[in-house]
View: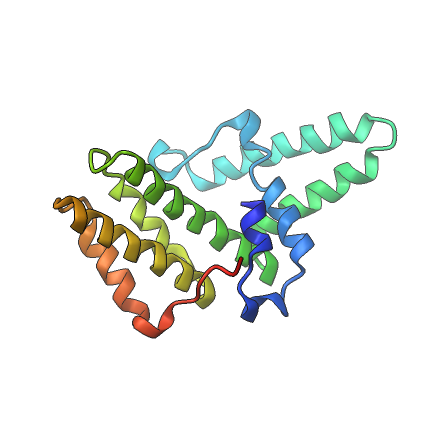
Length: 181
């Protein structure tokens, strides 16, 4: 994710603090290193997930980093960055939330390709629905177009193909914003 933040589309670059985006991407999953990756399918309330992750971040940033000589400020900065991501209020945090969802769609496509038509991960297409920024929707539509082409080539109709096509249509043909490398 952190590398994807560095590839922010030109229209967004001017309004983003890219080093901040990269930091948010790096710290956003820190709590999961101890709590685990809690998903909506786990049946755990969002408030409980937040409580567990917050306690974990306090432990990591205050008890570990906060007590290490010379790391006190780093712990506070990491905790603040994690909180900024969780709140999703800043342009940077909203962008990183979109990158997180985009990366899931991109990984889905890569695993399906690797599976050579034997692996259908269509259940992850839903992540594309949560992408908010138009530039990131453009990136996502490109990946979803690749998904349609891939499965057409295989000759199989995978799960969530109608949703895939609907998300592509949502932006129209002119909505493409390519990765700038």
